[in-house]
Image (cartoon, rainbow, N blue to C red):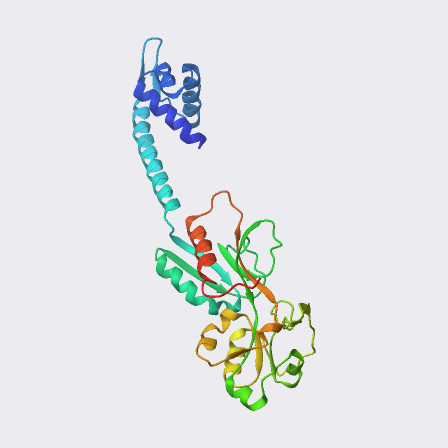
Length: 300
């Protein structure tokens, strides 16, 4: 920017015909203009003006340099205009990291793609805790709390887990009427990829947490296999509601023990802290916050 400033002073001096006149244009003293031109001549290694006490004229090198400087100024203004437009219009590459269960968010992602066709999405599905800044992600969607002070975050919504089973399974093994009944059923569990621990089923009685040593029939590190097995009557599983919205609506699965579950989940979108938030990130955050849980009641 210092070089652009020097170029601007030189162009004004050439157009005005004197350092004093150029200074009046720029709000500088004639002496300051003369010193700036002299520094530019030293850096270029050529004399740009013939100067005397009465007149000032461009040298041959100065005339050639003036044409170049005018082209530089024009290109700079064009680039600034284009950048200004890009800052107002959401477009470009958007790198987003989603949890492995993020495939279940794809209907909302697809809606976003239709709404903003000039944004090209690169989707990374991973349950590990990615370094948003070091790995170059524009946004990350995860559950849980935020512990990185370099990141901004926005809650996309709370959700209450649901315990589900297929009607045929319940016809064969019976429907659990209270949490303890689960001790006699085939339970399908989700294992956290980061910790290797089984995700607890958020059971409660009278508002108090209820810990049961549930049978472990099957374990999966992603949700899709649990949905598949539950639909085919292999057991009962506990999942976030967005994972089984269609299955519940179609009657392939039914919810159980709704009065004995507490709201434990929250989706958040994270993005690097910045003074200027790119439009592509802003519209993605706003869209996901508005649409992701639009058709589902939030857990209180």
